[in-house]
Image (cartoon, rainbow, N blue to C red; front, side):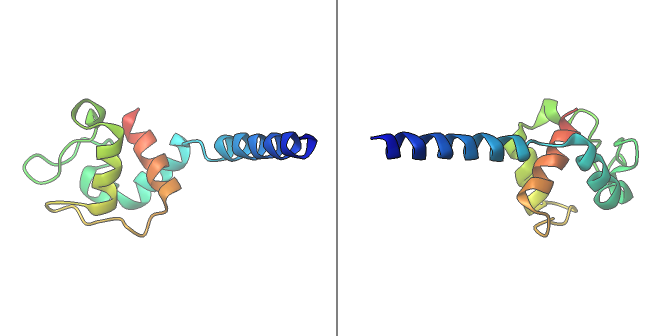
Length: 98
């Protein structure tokens, strides 16, 4: 029984540590945005009417899962960014939702 409690405590601690480590980082997302998105959507996220949509209010149009899916798969003129890790996509989506 003590072994089970120790194992449960270790697993709980590992889960909490991993969760804290994997939190979305909007500052990292801002850097990713600069590197991957500004060419089309602009540094101010205003986009280009008729070609590239503004991202200033993206969270009003799409939920977090939809934003992440759009980043990963692209669509229309937007290329997919499948080379980004899940953490990078989470960080970028967190930045865009601000």
